[in-house]
Amino acid sequence: MELDYYEILEITQSADKETIKKAYRKMALKYHPDRNQGDKEAEDKFKLVNEAYEVLSDDEKRAVYDRYGKDGLKGGFGSTSGFGGFEDLGDIFSSFFGDSFGRSSRRKRANEEKFVSDLIVNLRLSFKEAIFGCKKNIDFNYKDFCKTCNGTGAKDGQMQTCPKCKGSGQVGISQGFITFAQTCPDCQGSGESIREKCSDCKGKGYQEVNDQVEINIPEGVDSGMNLRVNSKGNVGKNGSRGDLYVKIIADEDRTFIRDENDIYIEYPVFFTQAILGQSVKVPTIRGEATLNLPKGAKDGQRFVLEKEGVKDVHSSQIGNQIVQISIKFPTSLNDEQKELLEKLSESFGIKDGMHQEQKGFFEKIADWFK
Ligand SMILES: [Zn+2]
Ligand SMILES: [Zn+2]
Image (cartoon, rainbow, N blue to C red; front, side, top):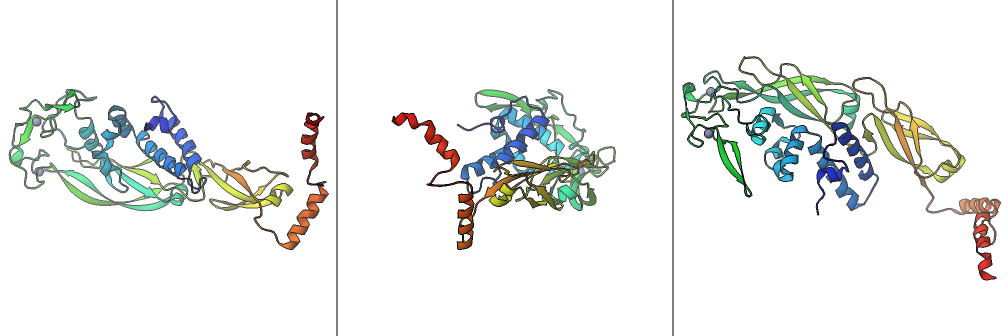
């Protein structure tokens, strides 16, 4: 049986955004390919975790998923999830919710706008660009209201009663054995349709206009954050432009794992460094730092390097780097090393194939053989 997205992230259906984000970070860390090298199952899990998060972290996609499941996300969203593509809030709402959900039964008037004035553009950043900020030139298309047809898409603004829905704006659509009243696909619920298309906009009611904007990405942005650029969206009927929202999609890194403003790294430590409690150099996102190991540091032990993480985009506070050590033993020894280790072994009192701690075990079971 296939797990649903909530089960994958081990959360309930009522989980809020913060909970979803936390759960995602936890699961992504657990199944990250760097930590599970060659583990096919973990790799699949990692993909699923990302897929679940992509849907549940997005309010619109989540609403569609809750209502229709994965099938609901096929089609329309396929194109909008592409990186660098354009999304239009109005299109998403009208194609998935129509007028029969939420804003139920309210009939759209024919002269209502065919698109909303706010526009979303996805922007993919590298791991480093998101952490340290950068300048980006964004090339995008916005919609400009067609003045020739007053945005109706019809020649001279002349409309007729929609033949498909006979002017009601709704049609019955069967999904399985249930029939939904849905927004008429021909007139988008207006009840009116175009007799003859406007030649300027080919019936769309708007023209697409190319535009560029250079934006400063501040330090510390992360996937899912939206940056607003004033007055760079679509042109509304009042003639002014809405806002452009730049949605950040940040890449993962092979070495560092980001959890909000904290950075995690699994770092190899040679067994002698751990036993002796030496200081080791550790890479950080800004270069390097020194980790002072305690004597006898254990495999998998975590250490916090304060303020070696990401600068918070709002508060400017700097997160930490968490180093999880992985103790490495030599796989081969030369003659000198072998001799040294044998001496070391002897100095710890290993004799007749036994160490003091091992003797204790034999003493415990001694009376078995009496
Ligand atoms: Zn037109
Ligand atoms: Zn219709």
